[in-house]
Every structure is written in C-alpha cells, then in structure tokens.
Image (tube, rainbow, N blue to C red; front, top):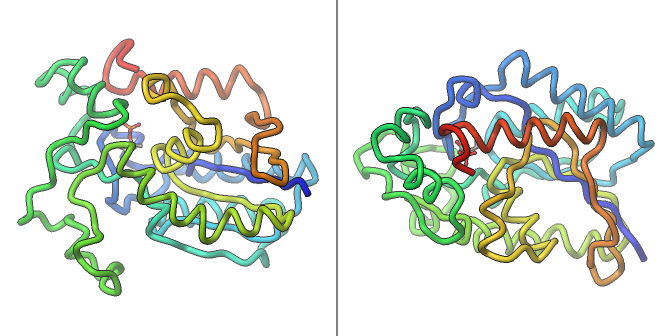
Amino acid sequence: MSSTLVLLRHGQSQWNLENRFTGWVDVPLTGQGEAEAREAGRLLAAEGLRFDAAHTSMLSRAIHTLWLALGEMDQPWVPVTRHWRLNERHYGALTGLDKAETAERHGEDQVHVWRRSYDIPPPPIEPERDDDPCRDPRYDFLDDRVLPATESLKLTLERVLPYWHDALAPALKQGRTLLVAAHGNSLRALVKYLDDVPDDEITQLNIPTGVPLRYRLDDRLRVVESGYLGDADKAAAAAAAVANQAGGGTA
Ligand SMILES: O=C(O)[C@@H](CO)OP(=O)(O)O
C-alpha cells in the first residue's frame, strides 16, 4: 500500500525576518509568512490532496501555518496533533542572536558548523535565561530532563524519530495521507532519515519556508518519489536564501 506524506516548513516568522536564531522561542508569523502558508494550502489543494491527519509542533508559527493551509484547502476538520518532538532544533546559547552578527563575531565557518554540521551542537543555553524551555509552562507535563538545552541536527533527529515510529509511520503503513507542519531543522532531520542523506551531505540541505515537500512512500516506507510543489526555481531560490542567512556561502 502506498502513502503520501507532505512536509511543510512554517511561513516566514518574525525572527526569520529579523535574521535571528530562533529554535524553541515562540515567535509569530509575519504577514508574509501568513501569505506563504495560504499559498501552500493553494498548492496542496491544486494537487487534489485530502489529508487524513495533520501533525505539528507546540510552536505557534507551525500551528498557525497548518491552520492557514488547511483553511485554504477547505479541510479545516482534519484532526491535528501537536507534539513537542516536532519542535524546531534547540539553538542553545545562540537563541535570539543575529545570524550575521554572530558570523562577524565568531567567523562564518564556525557559524556554519553550528547551523549545519550534523553532530556539533552550539553551546548550551544559560540556565538562568527566561527562554529556557524548562521555564515554559507549556512543557510542564514533561520531565525536565527530556527538555534540550542545545541540540545538533543529530540530537534533533534522535528526538523526532520516536514520533516518526510511534505516530507517523504506523499511519503511513496503513496508507494514510499525512501533513506535517514543522520547522527548518526538525524537517531537515526527517528528510535526512527518509532520504538516507549522508551526514556530510545534510550540511547542504536547506528547506524553504512555506513550500510543501511531497513524498510518495511504498508499503515499506521507502521513498518512491519526492519534490516541492509549485515552481521548482522559486523553491530552490528560497532554500538558497536560507543557506545565506549568516553571510555569503556559509551553507
Ligand atoms: O533559527 C532557527 O531556529 C533556524 C530556522 O529558522 O535557523 P537556521 O536556518 O539557521 O538553522
């Protein structure tokens, strides 16, 4: 039985616009981000996709992107699950800093390592900071020890994978059509897993905001085909812009 999985990075957020490391900080979508989310919904509707279920993170920018896309598709009734395992990669002590200024201070190479290396996390967030997830009441139900203080992409994948195995894979094996609205790096982690991207090649992968990435999977959940919906050149240009956020050619 084949299945369809669509991955959708949220539309432009306020800190995407301001070029700041975001991670688990709950910043809103910009007006452009909302428009991107609606456009994603139009692209999905044009493909005639009907979702059995949708999954998103516990961060507003992904939740609102999902609402706007489902609304635009006239499928607002689709059951939605929000889960912390789909949250963005935690950016540790970089959280809130300007990406270009950080590259000026530490060098583009170091910032590229922090942003895109597979297994090197940024320094951990300082425990006294108010934006430490341990202080965020939305995670009160969780054992503090599971909340990250920083994450590499590898740690992000290790956090996302239980959700894949427990929630997404079983539904896809039953032939369901799923939409996952999440984040640049939590989705890079899933793409690495699905496409079996080698550790040293994942450094080159950037996911644009608000462009649906459709996978067709076989009954063993192997990828049959995948690709961005809509204008391929536009998606490639948007991914290149993400790569260049910390200065020319850093990704
Ligand atoms: O700031 C972040 O949390 C992410 C996604 O916006 O940024 P980057 O592309 O630098 O990993």
